[in-house]
Length: 293
Length: 138
Image 1 (cartoon, rainbow over the protein chains, first blue to last red):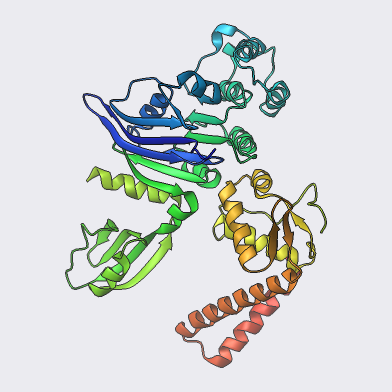
Image 2 (image 1 turned 180 degrees about the vertical axis):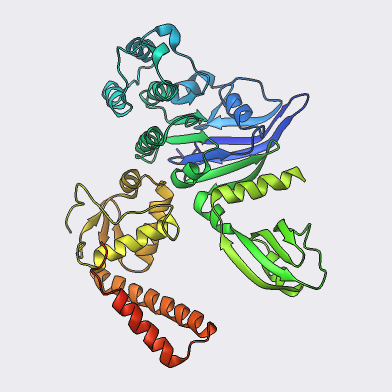
């Protein structure tokens, strides 16, 4: 089977004040894929539509080759979704919630469920209403992971988790993709975590895909450039170059090394050009800021 | 070829340390080999297993392994795993030497820019050697 884990093509959803798309996303199998973007970029809208929450106006969504509408039942059997809004309080206790959810999934892995309970320090007898926010998040992750889904989609799973819990969660996610077949799509604002744990990233801005690819290649592609210029050239609005700061003759810019911006700078009077590596977070801020102009 | 050890450990890697994470993994493994803790034929963990141990993305470990393989320090056998190459020890020493040479060259250039003359440079090198006359870090 050569299907991608998730393949979104020309997806469009119109709202009165916001349009998502046309959006293309390609999530390879076996990857941890980080979906990032500023607030309101459309991440949750896109994720919700994969699971049939909201009808798209155009385009296709395929998960493991299955159409998200025509093959909805098969898709939901093989893919799991964890949202920060999930609420399991009506089952009272942790153990009861697990028994209830387990009943729906023939593929439920009992031993793995028990292992996750231990890893996440969850107690079957604990009342869900008394759980901390972090423990509730871990419970919803357990309920999704123990199904052994082929595709796991997580919307902001680490919001409000302390550093220890975050490491536990990412440790389990890395374990989940260990066989090279299972895939995790994770939307998050924790960019240092995404840079460390995600193999692939997609960045969405204003409902459109801005960048997608291997995390290391994307981070490696950009540099923070500092240069000086006394000849009055305006460096604004040049492809591959986003001006971040300027103090008279001294400039700071985000430079795309896949463009000809560097050689263009050299031939247009920029001197003392120095390039510095960026973190994913620096890159994100520079790209998100540009949107504000 | 010996099987991968149960608790495979290399020097610590951290986003706070110098260099990209994959580069740190490359350096740490080279050090293991250069210092004789990983002999020729020793198995390395699979990159997915190692990613889980190190808490980094699979791509990061994959990239580190690819670089080590390109340098002839490790080799992959389809279906068997990844192993330290026969010439791994010599090669990691060679690459370490090349890196040291480049860093020294850069250091000397900075010193020259600061106005140091060749005699003073040698003096500086001597001072640093004395400073560094402490047991190597592991």
